[in-house]
Length: 212
Image (cartoon, rainbow, N blue to C red):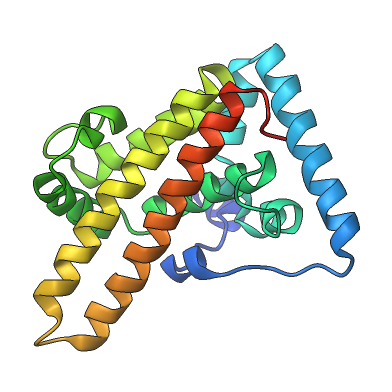
């Protein structure tokens, strides 16, 4: 009975392609108002009193509830805003949880190729197993609520740059033999690169108390 209950409550897993999806709302002004007010209220309240069980639930939110509830609140927000940054971080987390094997493959290839301090900033082991990458992204998410918010954003940006590097190099490998796969990897690399830039910019804004 216990196993059956767990199966009944287990959420439907979203495919990795959710990373490339966006959701629409009816009234842009109202969507923007709700996005900013909920993001600010949530973060301020939790960071003021970061109870372990509350932080645990927020880190595990997409595992428990899927991505749609968050999407309805934050998906249409500009990238360099608080709700926009939170949305991108939850998407990044979901991408890794949904396909940790691919994330680990991209991360290791990127780590070898990138030639920067990003692997140190991101903080993953070398090499990192799929399970270790899941733990890493959850640690980064935890830092949003009970650590240095800007550091968490910078770690996520470094992670995105490494994954983008890995996707780019793997796309080059597949270009001649599997062009469709190469194209998909190139698309992912571009999106990850954009996320890296936006998350780094959001970290800078947070340090200036201008991320709203």
